[in-house]
Structures are given as structure tokens and as C-alpha cells.
Length: 172
Image 1 (cartoon, rainbow, N blue to C red):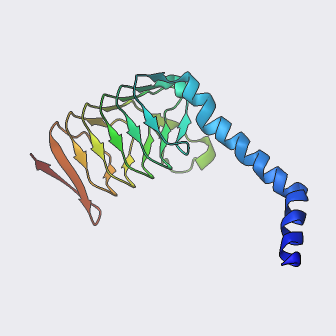
Image 2: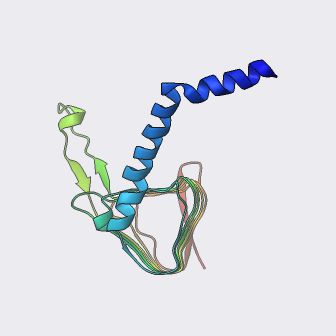
């Protein structure tokens, strides 16, 4: 018991322990707190502390939004993300408004990004582990099933689910 206590005290006194805590605090400030202040946001938002934002000035969040843990909402320098009223986003979902190009004989690091706006309509439910890609417009009342990769527009009042890499649309 005394050895265990000594080990805990030794770890608490370790500079590596404090360096790691400091690094995590900086990451949290950079990815969550600072962009959260730059956002255009409505009332009654429920945003989990692990949600990551980029280019907060280009993100608009309207009333009644719920964003679960470990989500990434990443706008880019030249594109916007607008999320309308009463939207629910499940955990581990990624909404990203830019993507890399794919050109032959040009190094990956020198290729331009493709940046397009994303619009998510009112009363949308996005399941866990979804990916919303650049240029997508999601209509009002849409339900997106867990694990779906959305690369095209979805018309209003539609249920979109992915089954083994095939995206299906079901009209309600």
C-alpha cells in the first residue's frame, strides 16, 4: 500500500505529468474555447466540451442545437457551415467544409483544397459516426442514420442510411 502511494506521489511530481496536462489544456482552448467565442450562435445550445471547431467565424449555430461528444465541426477559411434550429448531432460525427484535391504529379502538400459551404436545415437528426462532406445541403426534417457518409444533397423529410458503402434515400 505504501509503495502504491509513493508511486502516485512520484507521478504527481513528475514534470511529464504536468507537461501532458498543460498540452491538453492548450488543445482544449485552441479547439473548443477560442472558436466557440467566434461562432455566430443562437440560444439553448448543448455543446459537449469535447467538440472541436475550426474557423469559428465561419460557423453559424442556431437555437436548440445539441452536439454530442467528440464531434468535429470544421469550416475553412473560404467556406461556411450553417446549422439551423433544433438539430441533434450524434457522437463522433465530422462536419467538414473543405477537402483535398487529387491531382496526378502534384505533391499532396501542394494541392489546393476544395472548399464549399454546408447547410443543415431545421429539425435534422444526425446519428453517431456520420461524416458530412463539403458542399452538402441537408433539407428540413432529415434523419441521417449512424455511420452514413453524406457527399450529396438530401431533400427535405428524407431518411438517409448507409449500408455497406451504398447510400439509400427513403422518402417519409
